[in-house]
Amino acid sequence: MRAYKLLLWLVISFFLFAGCGENEVKTQEAALKPVAVTKLTEASHPILLDYVGTVQSKDLKRYSFKVAGKVEKVFVEEGQKIQKGDSLALLEKEDLHFSLEAAQKMMEAAKAQYDQAVKGAKSEEIRSRELDVNKANEYYVFVKDTYEKVKTLYDEGAVAENAFKEAKLKLDQAEDSLKQAQSALKLTKDGAGEEEIKGLYKQYEAAKVGYEAQKKLVEDSLITADCSGYVLKVLSKENEMVGAGIPVVAVSSDEYEVNIGLTQEDISKIESGDAAKVYINDQEIEGTVATMGKIPDSESRTYTTGIRLNDNPSGINIGAIAKVEITADLKKGVWVPIKYILNDGEDYVFVFEKGRAKRQNVKIGQLLEGIVCVEGLKPGEILITEGIKSIKDGHKVKIAESTIGSVE
Image 1 (spheres, helix red, strand yellow):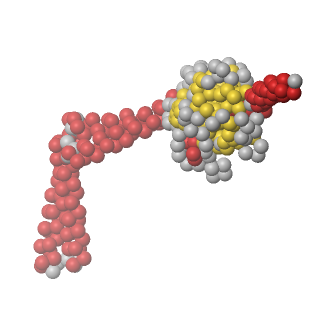
Image 2 (spheres, one colour):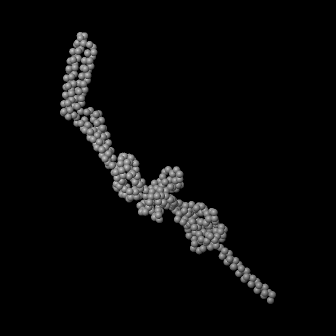
Image 3 (spheres, rainbow, N blue to C red):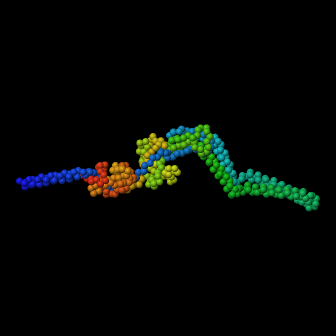
């Protein structure tokens, strides 16, 4: 009987202890935190540079007259839409026409002198020069005869020395006059010399240039637009005197650019022609990097960069604020959805290692549409993606079935 009781106790104890062990195992298994994971890989994504800028006209032109005068007519108003070739302003032409006529006469006179030198003198001009020679010769013969008579008397002592000297002076003058008349006749018969003709031609060319310049001033008295756009400002009024080169009308082209200021680091990442997206008043517009400044702004130390809009959107005004995204170089590294990154003063994630959750501090880099390139993680590591808010560093975790994927 005693032996029977001992055996019964042993059997009951066995089942009791067996039941406790099974419950303990189940309790330990229940304590493991279920998590979802994904395998990290290295990937390349484009870098987006985000900036805010202002809308500017691609071309801003200030039209002016090339000569001073009175404004006769202004054809446009501020804010008016204009087309290439439209008239903008007109200058009074009366004084310009007077100057043009004077320049034309000077040119025609110079041309006549040149033509005469080339063709030679007319017969009546030659006859006139011959008559001059005959008159000079007759006078010379008369004075010479008088001189010889006075000299004979002077040699005999019949006349004073002053009378002799006066006769000699008249003879010399008569001889010079005869030589000049003979030279003029020869020049008239032979025509102008080569150097003289060249000089006359240069005078004609100079007069012609002056005439053409004055003619161009008359034509430029009407200012026309050389591009389509909008009138920004009318700077001169009708009947108002305006100086040469003083702006009369300011016009902006209907092609727009957005000006942004890039940092020294970012401007080295892009090139002219790179694609960009521009957001203005909820409109998304395709753009292109058009101009890149080479000298930084003295105050902001940024480089002015122009983003040309590929389309001409409606309802956009100069000076409007625009957001710009420029697609720069590809960034290679480990990219992680930003929602998996926690922060307690430092940025960190949890990775799965030997059945436990391991805290791994990371450094956030380039951000792109919900994912971020990080330092501190390596390709091949297992990132915990779900259950991260209920675990701590060192917790034992279990991976839920069918959760292993990859992050790129």
